[in-house]
Amino acid sequence: MGRKVFVSRREVFSASHRLFNPALSDEENERVYDKCNNIYGHGHNYVLEVVVEGEIDEKTGYVIDLKKLKEIIKEHVIKKVDHKHLNFDVDFMKGVIPTAENIAVKIWDQLVDKIPNGKLYKIKLHETENNSIEYFGG
Ligand code: NI
Image 1 (spheres, rainbow, N blue to C red):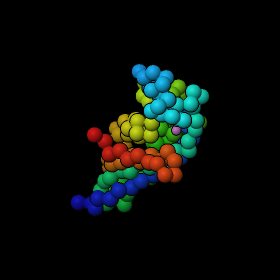
Image 2 (image 1 turned 180 degrees about the horizontal axis):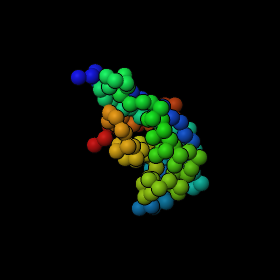
Image 3 (image 1 turned 180 degrees about the vertical axis):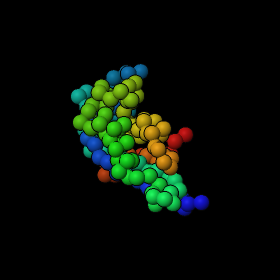
Image 4 (image 1 turned 120 degrees about the horizontal axis):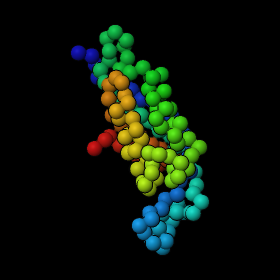
């Protein structure tokens, strides 16, 4: 049996969002989201880490070819979110308040069944240098 390791790929994307819950009044939105409720939105340079767990394949020495993982993330996530407005432009974010929490969960959903070797272990999303979210599924 191969040794179990965790491999990760980091990608960056720039996107804008507005934190707003249509079920709340304007005053409540203002109180909950403060500056993030600014009507025209604002942007972040997000840093995404995708971690895959698996056993090292004896033949290749890989869990998953990181070149392949990079292409999968580009295709299913980065192409859809980079330089986009998360409230309007992104199919997989429709109907979701685009907090870092929700973005991380939705990115997980985009990737979980696309990993050909090993399995998705964690999504980590940094929204700012100091703020990040980790999601392990479930
Ligand atoms: Ni923000």
